[in-house]
Length: 319
Ligand code: F6P
Image (cartoon, rainbow, N blue to C red; front, side, top):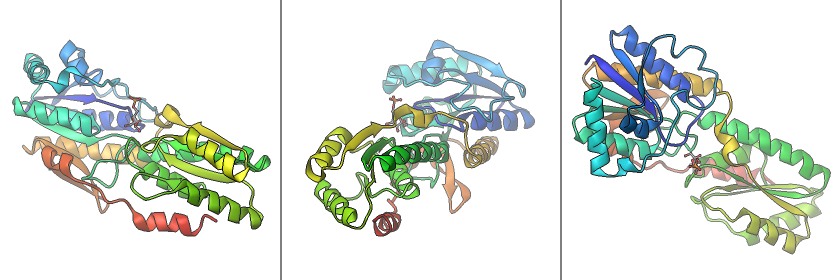
């Protein structure tokens, strides 16, 4: 192996830059050359590639977003697109590709490997929804951003004795909602993984009011949706003025936390080490705080348990 490519794909995540840096520097240190592929698989198809050197990845560690840009690529959903991607790799002499992204990106990587281009996946998504790893790059930063924003909502809700229904990202997974909810002392957390009822929220608000509490936070996971409707129902039935807020894409930005920078550096380094040892078509991640790797296809089929005990903690201390 002489030359590898690196790309970021799908939704960007804080820490992706640290992963690109680690991949690039580890590879160069081990004698490989590195091609940066800009704008994900779409960039590969468009020939949007340029060689990276050790200074190309300077001063990016602390920046949100991704210096390689990102994209969601429809063409790569089809065999023809994937085949063209493999041909492009051969044209540029790219022997293997490191793909930093989420499950959609790993599906692209798995397909590319079938056309003879070895791939290595690094989980970069704020959603933490990749089954084979306990942690994905960007998750910690996104949770901290959500926490800061919900804290600000609390200030104004408390001043006016109001209720805030706040929707956080997470795609179909409730991990950001659960952790942000606990960290912000939410009265109620709604996720897809656990049963919920708006009637129960209303009862809790009514009971808690008799106990001298008059402001409330309800955290809703994106996968549920309907925050505005939930807010209206709460206001109608409790009389507490309720506002719905969707935090949205602001959760994807910002300078990555220590945890994200370090995790990204470890995974980037590990991914290149594996490739150098002839281990290919894997996804790297963490289990029990140790780096692990799984076959891409297997990784895509793995499910992660929702932490029901943590959910119980939230319910037991939220009144
Ligand atoms: O996967 C990251 C994520 O931010 C999800 O939480 C969210 O569902 C999705 O991306 C939003 O995608 P887009 O940026 O295409 O609107």
